Image 1 (cartoon, rainbow, N blue to C red):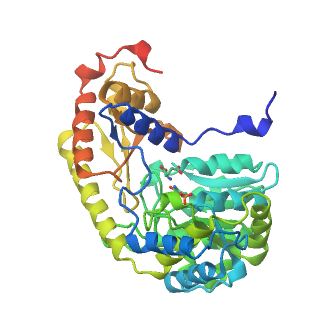
Image 2 (image 1 turned 90 degrees about the vertical axis):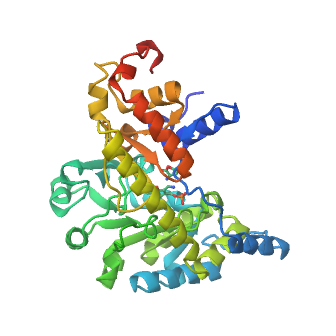
Length: 405
Ligand code: PMP
Ligand code: GLU
């Protein structure tokens, strides 16, 4: 059976694939150190689990409205009012099966064949694939020459009459870098002038270090609501990745088209998971703050380790999220050509040192690898020790070329 052209367009998610591979090796008894997972390693807070148990006990196990239960949409609305000062009616909010699903719904209803979406690069692996699935064209903009900060000049250079939307993800996956507030405002003004949709993926908004403050253009100009769809999820903020609850807020016409699509695909997100998300959004951020403080300690440890112990690898300093995006080009060079890509370097790390990391090429930059620090200090320490060994020129030159794919 010949599958559709659409099927051949889509790559599997590398971040999920590497996490799964590391888990499998571990279950086979291999001493794998995992830097792959893009999910907090903390248990979901018990009051959230209790809310789910309570919902199950009350028999809340049936279909809900496609767009989510009203209480949850109201909690999402209150969140936007508190955090951004913007009011959304419940019919301007759609709850979906994770932030990824919100983005999928959005691009499916937004794009016609050949419409362009500007994506600052490096980018989260799913943006490009979702845009392609929807018939769109991802237009990648390399931000590496500007400390990974996207700005108006870059947007103008990549803009064309086919541009439909621009994705903002600050702090970003994979770099953790936050954009400058002024750049964001300039970009928003340009988007309004050209009638582009700003898709702001704020999933890491609560995981920000060094007392920096999250910024979204909606905070300064509420009228930007017209040109913005804000996407978020409970996944990272409350360590609820498996719940699969995300949400989007935007103009009624867009949200209602997304709702129609969702009604013909997944229907509502899982009923009892929605009650967990409700407890999360109605609760406080004590858990999140503690988790963030722990992430910050881990980030600092890793940056210090690279600075003092592995000078050939140059990490980007993340402002938020839980990833170190590290430049390994000097290591690749010292392998005398044996390891000439981030994918080969990650294969080498996994095969020879049992260290799981994600190749930078998956995020659009082949000189880098991504290390998630959503893992314990013990794992981080052992993993960095192994990466240090692996990066020594004498060890790089020992490898068997044929073994690397
Ligand atoms: N956006 C970004 C930038 C992400 O890293 C992720 C990773 N999970 C998502 C969206 C989607 O999150 P989820 O679907 O798990 O809510
Ligand atoms: N977003 C996380 C990551 O980048 C989770 C996996 C995924 O959905 O891509 O690793």
